Amino acid sequence: MYNKLIFLAVLAIMMVGAASSEMTKIPASQDVYINLGSEQVFNKTDILRCEVGYVETNGTKEESFTGVPMIQFDISDLNITDNDIGVLVLKAASAEKQGNDSAMVAMLPISSEWNEGSDFVEFLMNFLPIWNIVKKNDISQMGISTDDDLIFAFDISKKLTDAKAVGDRVSFLLLPISNSSYKVDFMSRETGQGPYLIVMPYPVDLEANLTSILPTDEPVDGEMINETAVVPENESLINQTAMEAVNESAVN
Image (tube, rainbow, N blue to C red; front, side):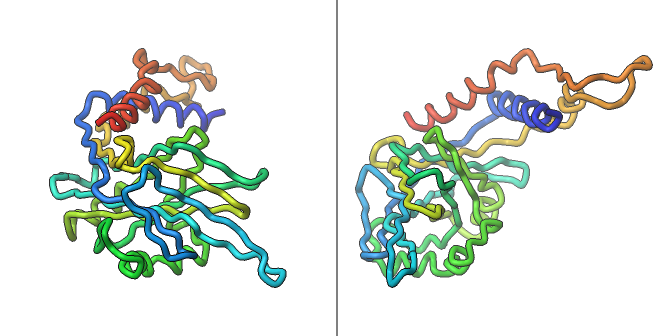
């Protein structure tokens, strides 16, 4: 219960703070998805398919990545500091999984030496350096999203800072992770509701506000305060602000 109150309190402060701060929204400049099995590249489509399937070969279950999205952003006009928050957001048109197996989408940064007209070999060269991480299932090196509401979000704050230090582009690969068949069809930039980067300053008054709203185990007037947090008057802005950010990004 205590941890839940802390989470809600931090979320309230961050979303209300973001509403009054400058927010930068950057749409994807390039996006494709590739079928690693057939070595096909799909560009200029309405979806970015993120899909893994499984086949039995000589009694062995083997995975086949039939949809791997690659997304690129132009960050030449982005001014970002270590105190900024960067989030990659995507809207899915649909998601399907088999049975009750857990399923998630992983995000990994890749090289940006590609565009929508590149061939399969060029795409391969841009994500081969991170493929060992994929094969080892080292999720500590990945950004993970398991959202069920068709809006997926990944923290990319550090990755944006690193990319901006060396160039004007940043690219990401999305990978489905599941022990059974799993497919997510993300909306591409051609739909007008494609992937976006959202960058905003971190609320500087977070520490002060936390002190005033979090429960405490220190006695007050000889009595212990129970686990009740005082929610800011503008708490009702939390969901509204979050939805407005996503919807406005989709429209723009």
